[in-house]
Amino acid sequence: MVFNDIYHIECRSRAKNNYYNAGGKEKTSIRRYLQRYELDKQLLDGYITDLEKLEFLKDYIKKNNGIQKEL
Image (cartoon, rainbow, N blue to C red; front, side, top):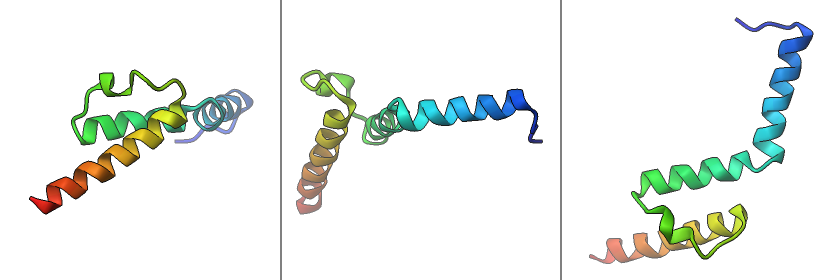
């Protein structure tokens, strides 16, 4: 059931804003990559921003998948 009163419309707007504009999308992607490939958070210690972490994870996973395919 979706409520269309002013309070719920503002709540949905704030949630959407937090997800897309405050970095929630990148953080969610990082968390999912770490869980899916069973990686440790310490792997990301040298990176500051979430975009750097996400790019590193994608490259790291591509390299490791290539190694496992050769085996």
